Length: 307
Image 1 (tube, rainbow, N blue to C red):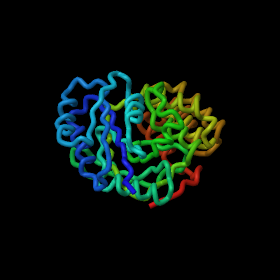
Image 2 (spheres, helix red, strand yellow):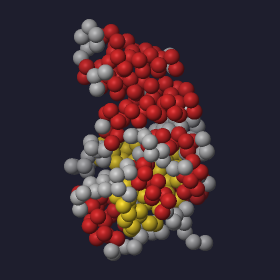
Image 3 (cartoon, rainbow, N blue to C red):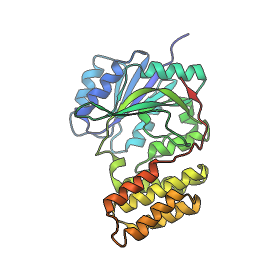
Image 4 (cartoon, rainbow, N blue to C red):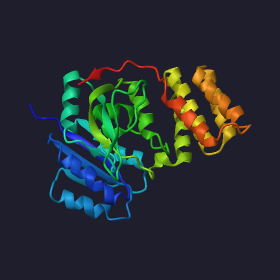
């Protein structure tokens, strides 16, 4: 029986200084039956020559252009080209740990899982020091950071791939649609390294907020209602952080209507009243809102835990 091919899809745009690490982390995988499909969204730096220096030596590395279409379109194009039974994604500024493919594939086959979400490390790019190790943390239907996913290609084809309309949140959005077909399994292993990035589309605040609004408008009714409420609160916090207090309060109210929990009420009160009277500074309020978002998250979906 032949070993399954894993097609690793990497969108890229002007990341010449970083893409070497992503490519080499794929080359050094202990599992060897893979292809790396790099989709360039129109780089103006020397990304192409760097990729070709690797593809000239290793025919598993393939370079294509899909200019000015965006990250979601790049991933969809990569899926259409993929020869593998399984799809792995890797952002051009992340890296896969050497046993990623081996560990994920073994877990997927052993447990008959078509969509698994593994753990990851967050590292400082300058020092390479580990800032956090994250695994088994997801409690709802949605999942981010595709650099730690492994998915059967057939499942991605069933749902029609990524939605290219979204200015951000494309990974979160597709994960909710995937959940209608299969609840992802939590893979008890750390397989990738993610470096915080400050120039990706998701870190542009207006686009980030717009993507979240689209998410709840289009898919909110299909989420567990506490998860929908949390997204409303996250949107409100986003508006507060860009200085739009009126919109922030509107979304905090909507979160409360959806889930009248104490922490959301607290966030609403401090934003509405304590900010108005200048009792708390904006930085402190932002920190409190962040704590509200990231604490006391209860399990909403029972995810199989696999090894």
